[in-house]
Length: 137
Image (cartoon, rainbow, N blue to C red; front, side):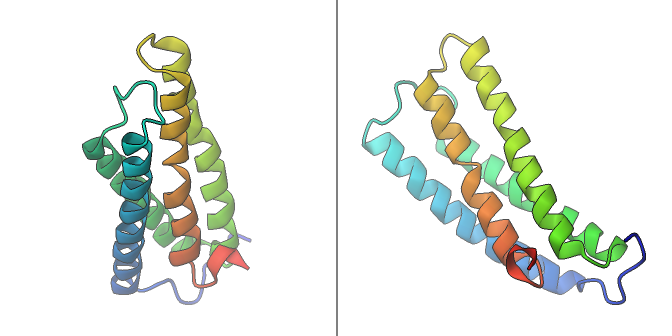
């Protein structure tokens, strides 16, 4: 399983996919943020702000793009491995938000859930847009 792939994804192609994924994930996360904020779905908004949404979405998609590029250079079944890694990272990414809810009096459960919800669109977009075969099929 660790033999090299014949043709890793081209850097330009990877950058284009990553930029497209970022644009889609930002639109979706800004829309979710706007809905949550305009409908007063959150009891607190200490961490739930647009600049933070943009930065964390960028870091998520940027990290996913780099990881996918590295996997294509190292493994034959990089698409399947990438989807598994993306799911694992998504689940692990909830831990800091849970820590905020449990460890900070100013962060409410609704804000923690809202923050966790913002992790899902970039993960979905990444596994659909970056691999050669969406969802690693």
